Length: 120
Image 1 (cartoon, one colour):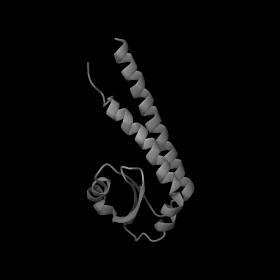
Image 2 (cartoon, helix red, strand yellow):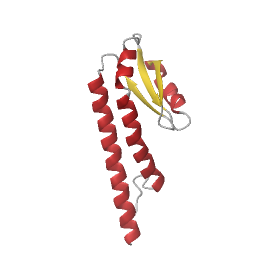
Image 3 (cartoon, one colour):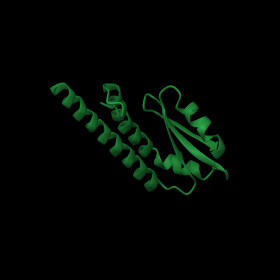
């Protein structure tokens, strides 16, 4: 049987933590939007939440450096979200709602798979 993903308890826990992190980003939507006005052409804003679910602030990152910088900013178990100028607080909250919804669906799917495997 092919394994099409990580359905471990650790993956389930990551999904639950992602829901909490989405709330942190949403709670800081106004801070993120305010900082977007200072982003230079060719750059984006990367907001970061630490592993302990605290908001760690924002970073201006050149688009060409995103692939390298985002993993650095997430180092230690944090999360990062990238925002472009022109985004408003409602847009951020919509994205974070979608992020939380996907994570909740993943956790529920993992729960179903774990239960199905336990019943065998």
